[in-house]
Each structure stands twice: as C-alpha cells, then as structure tokens.
Image 1 (cartoon, helix red, strand yellow):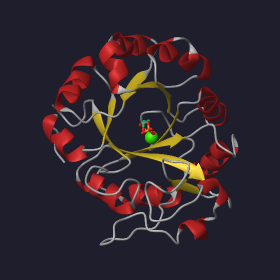
Image 2 (cartoon, rainbow, N blue to C red):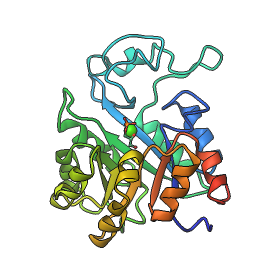
Image 3 (cartoon, rainbow, N blue to C red):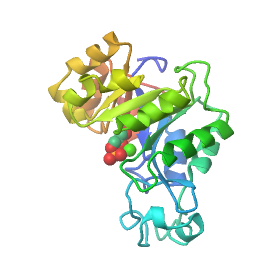
Length: 255
Ligand code: G3P
Ligand code: CA
C-alpha cells in the first residue's frame, strides 16, 4: 500500500506503548516511526496554559497528585511525567506544535482532543484557537492541507471550532453509532466521525455512510492486527494506535 493512501497512522498519545504517554519523548519516537499524525488530549491549567494530559488529575501519569485545572504550569512542572531513568516535564500544546512543525520529513498532523465537561468550559476552545492562530494553523487552505485537526466527544466543542475557524477539520468522537449517525456530526459540521474500534466492528456501514455525507472516518484505538486490516478494508481514513511503528509495517507503509 502506498504512503499516500489511507489509512493514515496516528500515534495515540505519542508512541505510548513504548514510552510514557503524552511526553515529548513519546512524540519524538512516533515521528521517527513514521506516524502521519500525533494525537493528544488537552486541558487548561489554572493560569490558562494548554497542557497535553488525558486525565483530570495527574496521579496516573506522574509522580505527583492534584487536579490540573487547579494547578499552574509552574506547579505542574514540579512533577515527573516520564520515568525514573528519563524524567519528563508535563508537555504543553505549544511544545508539541513546535516539535511537529519542526519535523521536516513528513507533514505530520496534530489531532487535538478537547475534553468535556471541564471547569473552564468553552474557554478551552477559545485558548486552543488562539494557540493555533499563533502558530499559523487556524486557517488552512483546505481541510486536507491542515496540519491541525480538532476533536471532541462534545458536539458543542466541535461546533465552537467550526463556527470560529470553518476551515479547520474536526472529528466528532462518539461511543455509539447512533450518536455519530443521528445527525450530530451534520448539525455541528464535523468533517469526520470518530468511532471507537468496537463500535466500528458492530457497525461497519458507518464508514460508507460518513463518506456519502462527505465525511472521513477516524477510528481509535486500533492496536490489534485484525483491527488494522479491518479498518484498511473498510476505507477508514485515520487510525489512532499506541503502536505506530508496527502498524505502519502491517500496512506495508514506509517510515
Ligand atoms: O483518539 C480518540 C481517543 O483518544 C478517545 O479516547 O479516552 O483515549 O481520549 P481517549
Ligand atoms: Ca484522546
């Protein structure tokens, strides 16, 4: 399969099976492994900085404790998000965007997921758009050309992005087929739907239905070979995986 054909491989939280998730090292490895996209979750600190962390708290992914929305970036930087051997500070979205844009081997995209409900509500999308503007990424010439994609399970979050930055591609993530086909993606103008792989196994028709409506499909989190092959056969555009290197190999794509 050519590198110019889907499915494109998105490194979920970086190359996160190999290295601690959402760390600079995990994303650097993903780039070296030939990932076409880098997925991250973003949350706002108390002083208004977007950091790449999945959970509401830092217990699972660092040696610290606390709620991100109640901590400043300086406070978060006190904790180790890496390993004892290779410590790592919390990664900011700004650092991840810089890393991605500095990577010249491939026009890798960043898939940025906003979590909801959260303390700061719509301010997350406001800050995200400001950050994308600062990097010159908020008004791409086309969705295909865009280096940034914004995703959320919250339709309102997708709508906020579409309203303010209509050229930015968006993914409406969903836990059920009904949510994704029930009109929400159309109402908010999402350019893609984002089913989990279990949903797609039960509802393979989602991909063709989305395509008929002009939408791509982004599927997560696709770590098994049978699921990778299944997504490729269905015509899924983007697959998010914790194992970008072996997924590229399975698909016969070069690094
Ligand atoms: O890429 C989408 C996927 O990451 C959604 O689930 O919980 O891993 O953020 P979660
Ligand atoms: Ca995510």
